[in-house]
Length: 116
Length: 115
Image (tube, rainbow over all chains, first blue to last red; front, side, top):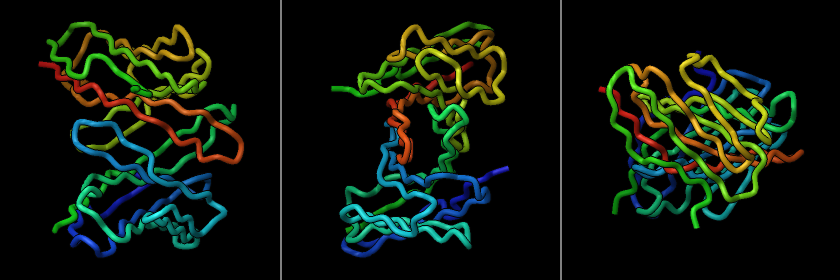
């Protein structure tokens, strides 16, 4: 039962254009949604997050949009750069009962290739 | 200055053996985690410890036993290794504060291959 889904395994975008990565979820109880970037042979790196009560969060070239009614979020990268080429994971966070741990549920990732 | 480190980076071993993976974080976080990324690249949480106390324990075989000697270390011991244990194991840490996303910071991963 995959609660977080990224239906596009890969995406290719030209340098300078916008990259849009999509994510869908099924559980309405998630508190936050996060995006992670992962290079080969490295661990995932936190990129940006959004609270479940917001609909947009922006940080430099990265903007995350949340549509709660559709249970959908997207990450926009503009302008895309070759260094953005990586696997992007969408994750949903639920703070546990103790309030001391966040349980992240990950999607399967989208491989972004930014071409020259 | 590595924030979350894991050793070893690669581990090749035979079925039936017992092995350990070590994790250390220097971020001052109270909570640490172990994740498994399987062959389908699905990243799934296994355990979480807060100040040496087990907080999250997903459906993981008893052969996997986490050990936290202090809040900066969370080691993973695996008994009687099986072929299906082959995966990349990631350690992570976080500081969960009210009003924050509880983002986690990951180590570089340990690729375990069981032959």
